[in-house]
Amino acid sequence: MSALLGVAIASLVIGILSDKWGRKPCLMLCLYGTVIGCILKFLFRFAFWPYCAFNFLNGLVSASVPVALAYAGDVYETKREKDNEIGILVGVSMLGSSGGGIIAILMETQGLFTPLLVGAAFVAVAAILCTRFIIEPKDIIASRNREKEKELELADGSAADNEDSADGLQPPKTLNKKNFAIIVLGALGDNVGSAGLMPLCLSPLAFNAFYSDFAARGEDPIMSQVAYKWISVLVALMVVPGTIVSPGIYNKLGLAGGCILGNVITGIVTIVLLYLALIRPATNVNFGIFVGLLYLCFPMTVISQLSTGPMLEAITPPHMRGMAQGANITVMNFGAAVSPFILGFISDVAGTPVAIWICIAISFGAGLINVPLMFVKGCCIPPKAKTDDKRPLRGEDKELVERALRGEWVPAKDLEELNEDRFNKGQPYLVIHPRKYQDEKDDLLNLRRRAKDDFLYHRNKTKEYLAKINTTEDLAALCEQANQSMAGANEDEVKDIGRELGEWFAEYIADSGYSPQTDSVLIKQAILSAFPVVNKEKELKPDNVERVLLDTERTYSRLLELEGYDEKGQTIRSILSNAQSAMLQQTL
Image (cartoon, rainbow, N blue to C red; front, side, top):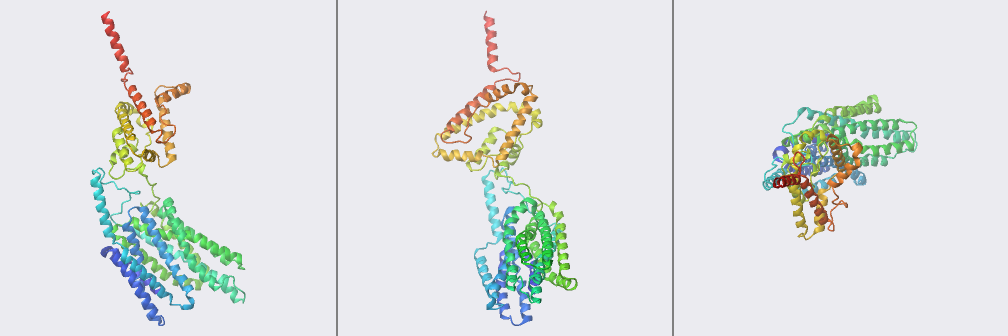
């Protein structure tokens, strides 16, 4: 308890100091202070009160977790990176507690306090490595900002406010105190509710059911004391699969949704384990199911605890990250220090099952508390990340790209130059869905008027590409790069675009006087005439690229001939023919 109280007090203070002094100095203070504290505890291991005093002091300098969480929030740019790294740090912290227990069991014959020196050695190595390799986040951020400024200068300043990030979530300017209180209160409830699962379901409930009750009757217990030690210590290793699966759950349900799910699963699993341990007589089958269920479900129960740090990161401005993470660790450690006494008292007075049922109710309550966070930006279900083929990239004209993505007309020259720039950088072309026919039917005349210039530009551009393939040294690499740029990121989406274009055409011919119900074959022939095959092989290859470009050029030339029609449908050829006929009539 003394160490947890020390950590609880120090977490808030060290978090605030890290916001002012920097992350690295505070992290070094915690690490080197922990080394000294472990050594002092070992030296005073035979004096109870001095040991408790140094244990408390060791806790005061062991608040590295909130500083590390704030560090991750500083150095990673996108929300997904921050969430993943913060979750990993929390998981590693929980795993460290298990590691200490494993060392204690393995060194049991060397004495109860000897593992303190091993722990001091591990922390000393970590401190030296951090001193050597960790960079202060302020330096990283300043360097990153300078790089962005240079990139924007080279990008002609066309999109100075366009962040090249997958989520585009900007950090808040102020701390929402209501959401902060909900997250911290939910974390406290989660921490206390989880005590019903670990340790109460395991000790004293399972310990009594599968060991003490048998020993009291003079029978061989189902679970030995050594087995109990390993079960209680190794269950913490299940944090690893929990850390692995949590990002996928957060991407589907959001951070708040994952937190609610974790609390609900904790409550349900605790109920099942409670009933398994209360079955009499206790059997090997019950014991096997109890341990298997505990290990199988424990990874899901930690999802809620792993979500707290990322949720705080999402609602906290950068200059208050240390304070927010520190306040959360303070509350959680205070709860972890005090709740065992309260739950132990309830167990003595009303029985262990009553204490466990209280924890179950708290777990469900913690999930309920987090429901409002389902509607908070950064904690809610994340929007589907836009791939590069559906968003403006750094240096591009944001307005132009967004118009094109909406299916609106943009000059062929501008769109082709944008895609050509992407091609040269190895980036995908824009994937553009067509507008619905009903949305642009009134603007079709303007679209037709612009066709001639667009067709002419593309025909000339095709001639440039023909010249390029005849001068390039690695034609295969050029074709492969073109195929990658033209390919959509999602094959299903490519099919959807084709279907949408077909619907547009069907509505157009029906609205333009054609009769597909009687002239379907004729319409197919018209389509074949207007859109001759240019590449049946789908992809460009060194042996077909020239033919594809030549056929494409011919297609644009035919389209340009069609654009010789005036608004009344007369061709230039017919106009000249009529003029010639008039001249002949005058000579007769």
